[in-house]
Image (tube, helix red, strand yellow):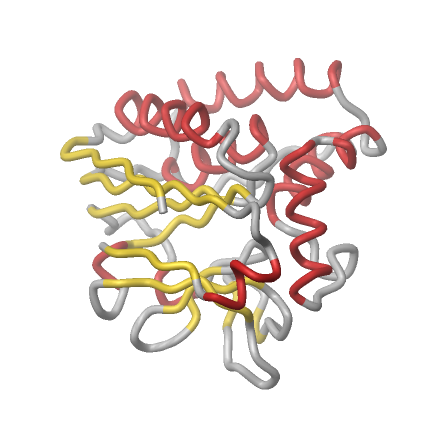
Length: 219
C-alpha cells in the first residue's frame, strides 16, 4: 500500500507527517481485557485533563488548525480525536463497537490523534492520496450519512474518499469480517510522538487482535 500526500496538503499543512500500520488481524465483537484497560485509562485521563485543557494538547490543536487552513470549521465538524476526548471528559462512556475500533479509539484518546481505520481488502487500487475535499464530493460517513467534506483533509483511493479526521467512509469500514487492517495516524503537529503512538497501536493489535505480518511505515 502506497500513501502519498498531495501538494495542496503540503502547502496548507507543511508540518504534516503520517504513519501507517498494516497487519493481518482477527477481529472480535468485544474484548473484556481491552475494556478493562480502556476503563482504567479513562479514569486517569479524567484526572489529567478538562474539556478546556485538551484544546492546548499539541496534536488536537494542530489538527484544528489544519481544518482551518484547509477551509473547514473544526468546531462544527470536530476531528474524531478531539471528539473522543471531549466525550469521556463529559463523563460519557466510549461507544463499544468491536475490538479493532475500540483499540484504535484508545490510541486516539491517549495521544490526541485522529486515526483512520480501514479494511484494507475494501480499498480500491494499491495506493491512497491525502488531499482536500471538494464542493459536492460524495461521502458517506460511518453512522453519519452524507458528510460535507469540502475543505476537509481526505484520503482517496481509486474510487473516491475513504477517510477524513472527522469520520471514515462506510465503504471501507472495519467489521468482524476484517482480516487485513490499515490504520493511519495523522500527525498535523509533525513527526514528534507518531512512532510512540504507532508502537502502542502495534502492541494493542498483537495483544487483543492476534496481529501478524505487521508493517509500519511513515509517509
